[in-house]
Length: 444
Image (cartoon, rainbow, N blue to C red):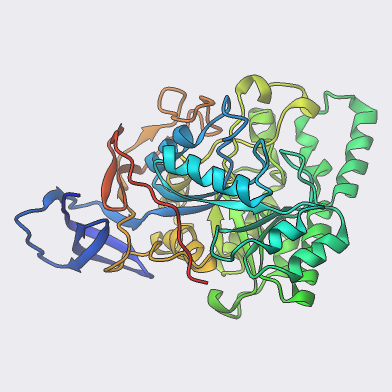
């Protein structure tokens, strides 16, 4: 692989910004210094641009196998690298579900065959695969996923004895979708009695309510404390849940960690009138006050990670009546640009974006040699022009499903180049035909 020398760039890494050159060699960062010279290297003049570690997205649904008409590993990982995401962790609710070691390894084969970004897959816990889970090596994949509230793929785990045994029997991070199914069913029945299937989507956050979220997440956290399990709560959506998390100890010492997704930081229930089912997610986008509390917790470090929960569906599916419209939406291409908007608004620093989207996922999941701009680390890097506006629309959207919830929005910042393991994978709208993605390795 050819050597690459990035010149005069502003490096954003480990809570600092500094101007430097960065030399990439043999898939890794070989040198970070001012005024590097190397006659054999291809030069990228980057004056005025910012260099970030590649984003690590700990929660995506790329729909392969079984649902590839919505998206697949190749299409969605290409969209990801265009958005500065160089590493992803894909969820188990595909068809077949990733609930055996054999199917897990088959998915790794799929990733090897077609992914443009580095990859790992979560192993799905169910009511009846505890013995299989016990056989899983702690370094085999990124972790275990539990749906403690039903979602896409019908993988609800509702046997409390099984849940406790899973918590007791894995050293891996247990990532949980927390919504109380009984509460949701009761709320849905009430609104169906009033509206039938065509429930106004503005009531989605009252059906999949604050109570449903808090009841489930608080129970999961109590069980993690009881068993000593390592619990990571996915896609938090309510202000009330923020009281469950700590910021008085460093991430490395936390046994219970928290994630928030782009859509819960961006939208609120006020957007249902204009966006409709396009912003129907599980857990639901909730109130502006909830959004404000999520931001507060993100900034004071009760929330550790920003992710996407990228979950593409066709517009024909999303445009169904409420009860038939699936939850989820595509986000990987627009996630980093969306957070850079918050930088421009003065809400979030570049250093904090990198901490929550790059450093912390690497620390939390014990990923080897990724998530930081350090000599010897894999060269997963993103060049960003903070003053290069572009419009999100169907023409610029790369998802297989062909739409974005940001349609019509003009972003101020643009990802211009993305390097995956030292290889220029994306360059101003053009993709390399070569793939240099790797399966993630872990140090646990």
